[in-house]
Every structure is written in structure tokens, then in C-alpha cells.
Length: 627
Image (cartoon, rainbow, N blue to C red):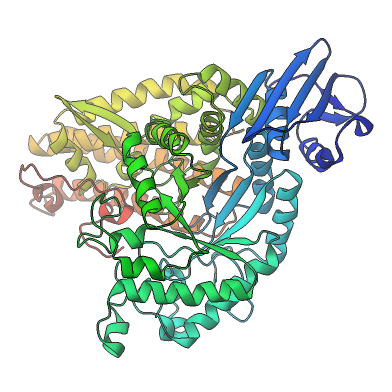
């Protein structure tokens, strides 16, 4: 942590409701009960919304608050040497962390996150667990996935409560269950498609009953998010073979009704992602279709006790959010807003993408008087993001929710340094690894993970970028060189993102891009001296960089996550190294006359205006769909 004054509170002068909060923060921060230091006092007030007011005077800091979360944010302000009044209209300000897409965060590391979240004023955390919790009597549920035990969840619940945070289960009860359906012997009977459960099958509801019972027992919260998003092929797999076609609206509502009754049985109130009600109203299944009506007959069958979560991390204008909020209200529901801190398909927290979507989202929510807001952090395609880097986005987004101006980075940087112990500006610089480049009057984004895992001989992603911009390789290496220069002074910083790993990634990106450029040019010109140099000298250097990248990835992963899932990324990195070896071998065979040409370099796509923009590993590692 950055150097801050010791904050001294006294038990006999402090409201009892804050004892657990302050004791828990004292495990890490200079917030102590008794002794010498800056006096920290508290006064509870009555106010609308969530209000945190910090008043500094000689030798003393007074925090006025109207909830435990507001008091915690006040302590964060005191640590950051900030003062003044902050307020948010959101009675719930939360996060949702994806712990289902490889990365399952360790219990102790989640506790560290909870402390940091509380100091920004968050009062709710959802853990998105598709199958990463251990269900009694279900040995393949979460098998080899690092699933949480009920004791671990209870431990987290108790710890979060001390910090004024409500821990809420966030699961799936219809789609996104491919991780269990893959165990066909155990779950084949309850599967409709590869990802969706079989509606109306009694064993489906036996399993869901176990799911709901687990979370009802594990957590004190009486809310549960039961998922049900993106079930695009609902009723179109085995269901249609057994029962014939039935309108997806009917299937969805009937299933929700049954799951809702299970929730009532276990005393929990459900939330669901709202997208399918809007998707099924139009043939393209476009969630953000602002015009297609949801049939009144369908609206009437939606259980009124279920909360609808409107999720949107894409729109960059407040008007779009306002329209969708109205659409939810038009069908009789007050939406919970799910925005996003961009971590998915990213190696590092993407501040620019987050900023462009969170600012208009919060603006619209304030205008429309939405009461509940949380920020998702997904892990699509392997959860290879350096998740601690996203703490910068969480501090920034909480500041926005509490009225800090979007461009007031000085205030955000002070809180981030005091509560997370790192440089906000360096974090934002590192986020530039997800680069935006310009070709003519058009902008395009370069994914560093796709550039790293792009097959070095086929160059599927590299060539895609060249079709966008013939000078892409020169621009991206120049951009990464500049980033490297700025980040090297932060190489040893691991407090909120591992800078050594991102530096290793930049080194690999520069070397691999330059190698691919040189290979294309040398092969096209049949420059045999250059080709031999690439095989003998350049590729071994790229392999060494890939090995460094793999080693630092392992370090940053195991610092915060259970080991399960690491193998997925290690296999990708090992595959890259093997293919680099193969590239060198193929060059030598070509030079030695063993082969007349290098087939992969001959098989480049013809010039065209079609851009596929692959953003997932399987789209760049091979020309096949097998991976």
C-alpha cells in the first residue's frame, strides 16, 4: 500500500455496527483500535441513497454515513486523504465475478477483493458459478474444475458480511451448462442440446432443487440469480425429437415457473438475465431490438416475484440504455442493471472499453432512477485476464456511481493507490495492450491474445489484421515498444495486476509480430539467407519469450486462483511453442530441398473486404474447428 497515516478508532466512541468492518480492514490497512495516530470517528446520519461524508480537521477525520457500505467508503476516502460528501442513488452497488470459465479465485484472494470492494462502497458480490460448486451426490458436477465446497462459500459469506457486503449466488438453471452436460453418462437424460437442459424432464428439476438448496443453505442472502440467458436453441434438440416443436416463449416461461416454485420452497427470491424475453420477440434473436413487442400472453405468464436483470456492456450512448430500461418497465418489471468491467477476451483490464460503456450506462440509470446496479467481469475463452488489474475498473466505476466526474482521474488514482497499492495511470497504460489502431479514417482493434496464439505458420489473425491495414505490423510493434518503455519502471508491481507478466507479453508480441513479418517477406522474395536466419536465430528467441510468458502467466494465475483451469492456457502456450519449432523445421526443410514450398505460406487468403475478426482461441490456432 502507499504510505498513509495510521487511522485510530476507539471502540467506546464508535457505533457497534462498524466493529466488524474496522477489525477486518485492520487485517491489512493502517486502521487500528487505539494507540497514536489520526483519530477516526464516525457518526450515523439519515439521508436518501447511500451517503458518505468525510470531514477532516486537525488530528481527526470524521466519517458521516448512513450504511455500513457508506462508512467503508468513507474509510477508503480517509486512507486516500480525500474529503467531502459523496452520494449514490443506487441502493445496491455490486459486482459479479465469473468463476466458471477456467479461473476459480482462491478463498483468501476473494477476501482481499472484498476488502478493496468495501473501501469503494460496494455492498453486493455475486459469484458466477455454472458448475464450480460441489453438489452432494453429484460427483461430476464441477469435477476437476476447482469447485467451491459449501464450507468455503459459508466462510466467504461470513467474511463479506463483516465488510457490509451481501454475497449472492449466481448460477445457471437452463443454459450455459455445457460443463456438466459433457458428462453424458451422468447428465445425458436431462440435456436438450449441448448447453441447455431438458424442459419438463423430472430429473432436470431434481438437479435444480439440489442447486437451489445448496445456495439457500450456504448463504444468508435470500436472493439468488438463476441465470437462464442465451438459450438460443431452447427446445430444438432432443426436446423436439421427443415432444415435437413448441414455441420457445412457452418453454421458457413454463421452465421459469417450475424453477420459481423451487426457489419459493427454499426461501429465496430469484433474479434472471432478461435477454431471452426480448430475443424471442424477433427472428434474429437480437436482445437490443428496441421495437419488436413481447406478446401480452407471454408477459402475463412471467412470475411477478422474479427480478429481471438487464445486461448491457456494449452501448456507448445513454439513449440506448434508457430505451431498454423503458422496455423492461413496459412489461411490468423494474430492471436490475448489469453493466461490465471489461475483462473477457482481454489479457488486462480494458479501461477504454469500460469507460465508453459504463459512463453512459450510469448516466442513464441516474436519469431513469434505477435502484440497483452491478458490474460483471466475465471470463470468456479461458479467463486469461490478469484479474487483479480489474480492481482499477472497479474503483473507477464505483467513483462514477458516487458522483466523481469521469475525467477526475486524480481522485480515482488517490483512492486506487491507497486501497489497492498500485498506480492507476500505469494500469491504464497496460490496458493499451488491447490496442486500437487507425487505418485511413477507420479504427480497428488488435487483440493481443489472438496475436500471441495465432498459429505462427498459418498467420490467420496476422493476415486478418493486414487486410485491415497493410502497415498493421509496423504500427502495432511501435505501439507495444512505447508501452514497454512506460511500463518497465513498474515491473516489480504486483499489487493490482502483475506488471512483469504484461511486460513479458509485450516482449513476446513484438518478437512474434516481427518474426511473422520477416517470414512473409523473406519467403515471398525467396531470400534464403534471411529465411535461415529466421529459423536459426529469430524463432529460438521467440520461443524463449513464449517460455517467459508462460512462466509468468503461471505465477500470476496461482497467486490468485486455484490450479484447475491453468492447464487450458498452458496447453495453448505449449502448442504455440511446438508450432514455432515446426515453423523453423519447415523453413529448414524448404531450404534443404526436402519440400518444394511451404504450403501454409502459399495458402494465404485472396484480397477481399471480408473481415472475420476472430476473438477466440479456436479461431486462430488452426484452420480447422478441432482444437
